[in-house]
Image (tube, rainbow, N blue to C red; front, side, top):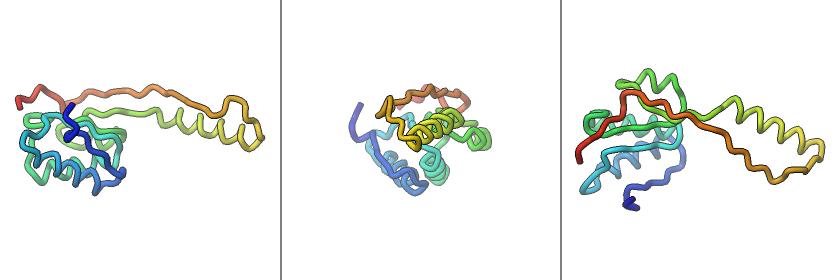
Length: 127
């Protein structure tokens, strides 16, 4: 993958907005974008709308989290959903163990399964 196509933001709406703008200024802009958090997804969608870029006709888009937003935006966004409830439960269990000075199993690496919800924001785009 061309390193110019990989952008790292600060997980804020403005970051998603500006990074998407940068990507669209590249001589051969990407035909697909994957955004790694909810706030940056919002910023990216704002930039796409302001630039009149058509999802999925001109760019395929996969966002992150917030199933409500993904259903409201048209076309419905494909998103990666993280197991929020399980993350909270795991964090609470770890905190309780730490409060009891139980250090068995530390440091903890918890791998939780995400889910990719394919909706209407993806298609093969010629580029």
